[in-house]
Amino acid sequence: MRKKLSLHKQDIIAAFDKVAETYDAAAFVEQEVGARLLERLAYFNLRPKRILDIGCSTATFTQQLQNLYPNASIIALDISLQMLNFATTRTSNISFCCADVEQLPFAAHSFDLIIANCCFMWLEDWSKLITNLTRVFAKDGLVFFSYYGPNTLTNIGLENKWLDAYSLSNLVGTNFKDPVIETENITFQYHKLRDLLQDLHDTGTCTFDANINFPQLELPISATFEIIYCHAWDNGLNQYKDAEGKVYIPVEAISFTQK
Image 1: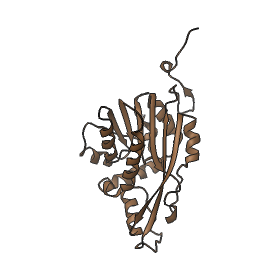
Image 2: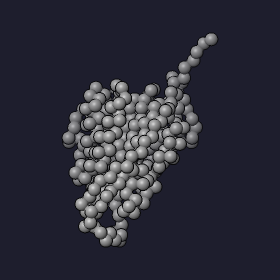
Image 3: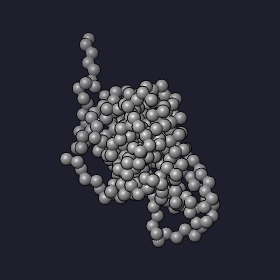
């Protein structure tokens, strides 16, 4: 039985459903981070057969991923059906799946490359994400993702509970092999604060209470985004935890040697 989405998840879906048609025009921050993520990925000598792109939105990033790995089979996943409906009108040879990353509907060991660009900020439970990733991870697979850190847009009073690099390092380091975490601050200059707020709205990144008073809406502003990048490898045993926290290692992942 499929679990019900929380009210928080329903709010996220509603927000992204509304901005499917405006997303690309406003998402140049996500597009810039995605380009930098792919530059890092290109350094690896990978020949993935099966790729999962998590939080694909309108599939702009997925198409670039397809160009990098033209022989791979790619599934693009998003929780917003409207985003996926828009994405399917502009690309081919990519399979789409509407699902929650905390409840991935795939068989064990399905993907040898799992990638996500700027979409893990809205997770309710990182442990569920890790559980799902380790379950669908193929042997010797690579996970690679980016997301906004908690120091993003603090100059305009953005409050969030986004995971910081130190906490991420502890979490990933206990579940994956050879994790590497980088942080980068990217600053964009806006002619008006109003334009920045509009972009945040049109990408579904965040909304602000109507009662908040921004007295300098027409003045220029520097918008600094803290970007956290992480890549890590399969831990070699494909172990994963069930809903009760019990650890399982598939028999086929265990090798035996005779003396």
